[in-house]
Image 1 (cartoon, one colour):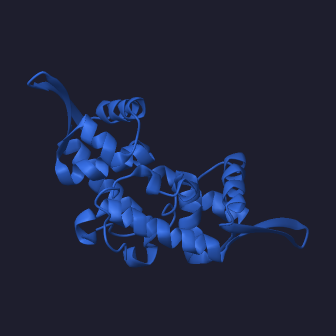
Image 2 (cartoon, rainbow over the protein chains, first blue to last red):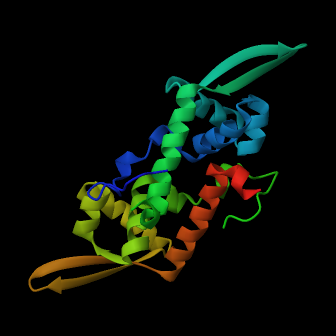
Length: 109
Length: 109
């Protein structure tokens, strides 16, 4: 799906979306690409990070418009639900295409 | 090739090899996985980085044993040749398997 490899810039590191690429954000995006949405607590356990660390990355994804954060209550329990946005899904698909191009350059030619 | 997805830790960010994952190092590894070896100057232009920045990343890859650096001369011109090692190739293959697992979780099940 990556299409044609650009000979000159095929390996340029700037072609990799840094917002998605950070390891924690990548894991969040990977999870949300399947689940669509997830509570903060679940995401934290899936991705394997501490509270504060996840908050920082969630904010960065939110600022890029890749996720939308919804605060609500389940009874008395506060929930923070992260939803993958359409922009986020597009960014994820573009990221995968770029990574596949890097990881399988022969297949892209 | 990723094999079976581990249900509990399938999205854990710590499963991603940080030495390979940094964008510049990833681009270097991607290039060397095809070329086997490359002169520093060529790598710099392929990857799109400045001199000093590439040196830092080359050193980190060398310290991990993923590349071997050879210094030689072509006439009077000094060359710094970076070779992908067997360890580096194994790390690259393991990295791709891990990334494919994250990027295509459905395919890995």
